[in-house]
Length: 208
Image (cartoon, rainbow, N blue to C red; front, side):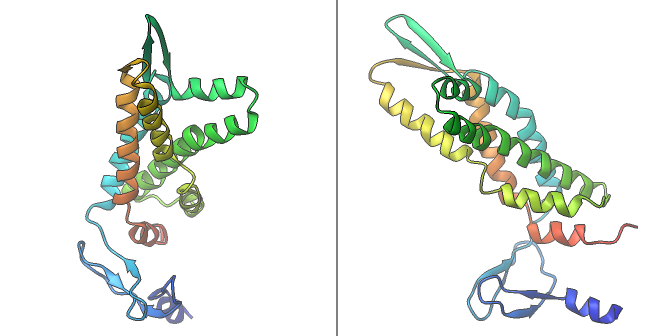
């Protein structure tokens, strides 16, 4: 029974065409592709856990100033008005658009924070070689939330606002803008540096 289980664990299915293939260890920098459809099955990355842990921690450090500090200050005829991401959520809510405020709050605040926290939790335990029973659940939650953290979309909204307002107001970029840009790049880098295949392999290891 144990040999059969080990044999099953050595197989993987292509997510595109369902072809069963034998799992083989690859060196970082190489990638395994499905021979039938060409889909990339996995591509090992060097020091994935260490890099992901460092980036997740950096993202959590940048998160609070990026959300709560003013991003821009608009100066129009001597009148100045500054705003942060959290201020934008409050303004939308007070305007009566409760559902829009909820979605903006979830996608620009709650989901990115939960994603970074889950990624930090999982990578930290893998780094320390600790395997609590909730580790697979947190990993799955991170993957489900991965497509809901829309910091890039919020950045596009900021760029559109800058393009529309730069003719009628002088724009001062505050420290929150720098933190938000840093948070955006760190969040993207953490997703890129994460080797999902390696993470799942380590999670499935038996505790020593």
